[in-house]
Length: 79
Image (cartoon, rainbow, N blue to C red):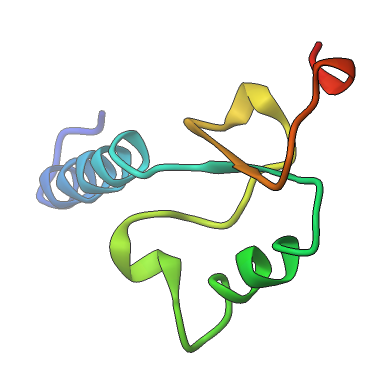
């Protein structure tokens, strides 16, 4: 961090952005049925998930915090 007047403000902005990333939920959609169309509509402008703290879906389980299972899961589909 530089010694100067603008370093304090930059540090606060970085802390705010890091806080937002830490407490945002990232979804992992596992869509297996026709209900997937309804799930995809919640990311649209009418039912915007971003205003509730859920960001865009992540298509990797490593990057996600919440697994949304939409549809029927059988024993054969289990990992």
